[in-house]
Image (cartoon, rainbow over all chains, first blue to last red; front, side):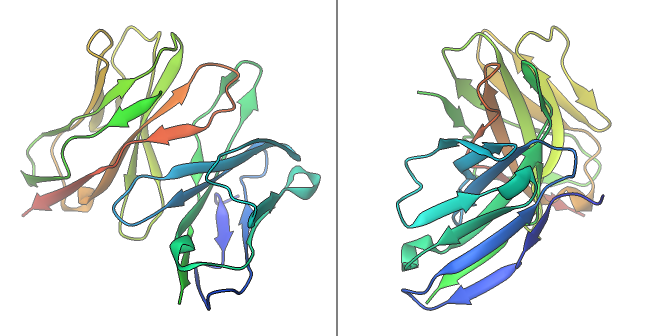
Length: 116
Length: 116
């Protein structure tokens, strides 16, 4: 296993279109996170999964955003009716949560979305 | 509210010299973790070093060390013997508590440039 994989690496879409991104975490990691990073800023938390359960969603995640993690493996992040403000880098990370602890999170290379 | 502050938007350092990147944090939790990540131009967030709030010794990982001053709520990253490949964005992040899901709160980052 070579790490967290995200596809596509780049996506250009027209405003109003729907887009879907995929994240494949490190295989034994039960926690999966999505973050959004705009230019010049640090990543901002969007949502996270413990296995297949989505346990927390940020208020940044509007109704146009939906994330799934069927079977607790890969995850998808869909944005409906994209807006120019959605242009950002979308980062996926995974970690091994255990008991009351957690390992460090490992990040993928991100999907850069440009809405034109 | 939990917050990470990085006050240095950009830093320059001469190759082979040491550099300190500042990070202060704010939390009401007694148990938390502090992380540093490196983000080269390729976009991937690379984990560098971790410090737990109950760790009495400062963390070290090769050329990276974390100067943890709990009373001052600071967690500065020290890079010794800088290399040209160290040029990148550096982000300080905090993970709160145990059983908090493991999400990270990031600072705005410091862009480090290493001069030959």
